[in-house]
Image 1 (cartoon, rainbow, N blue to C red):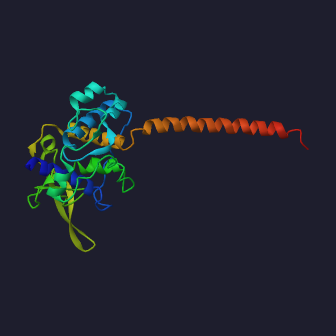
Image 2 (image 1 turned 135 degrees about the vertical axis):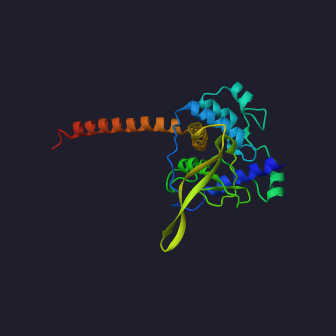
Image 3 (image 1 turned 60 degrees about the vertical axis):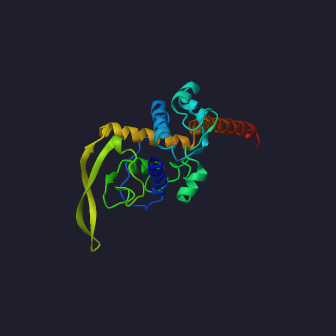
Length: 251
């Protein structure tokens, strides 16, 4: 029960965090590459392990993961956590009715979470990538965690075992006549199971997958769009030459 509660708070904080104030902590560029199927597969695994406990992806079916190079057998063996059919949508492990009774609302769907933040000081992927990597220990908060991108976030650091526990260091500076805290660096308290490079890659893969999940047909759309524009350009050229040929003897 305690683990479910923490996971739910985490997921709710992720989505609410996406609505935090703009113009705050600078966003890092997310390593999004929708043609990197290996990265997308790793991200899908992280999503299944850390997100589907409480959140659904109601507009994504498991068998759509074949688009990123997975076989249906691989999906069955490694990613099916809430159903035994690859044709089903990605439903949360938690019962929606129980979640509503316990917490007053159903955890939001994450299908398009990476797209919902686009245009706010960076892409939605940039926001999520920075947000998930800037948690720090804060004993003044109920969860014991805080975040640089979304201060006082209600979400605990669900990936802390991978990253380890860190303390954020601040300098007190004056801004517009008021003293404010300016971030200056990190102090590692306990090590994680991954080093900094590995953790950044894990989060990058997860964000890459979330970006892809928001529009799985994006690569097809872009490819078709290129061919359509090429056809239009060719048609315009032919029409222009036909028009010139038709009118050349007209006086």
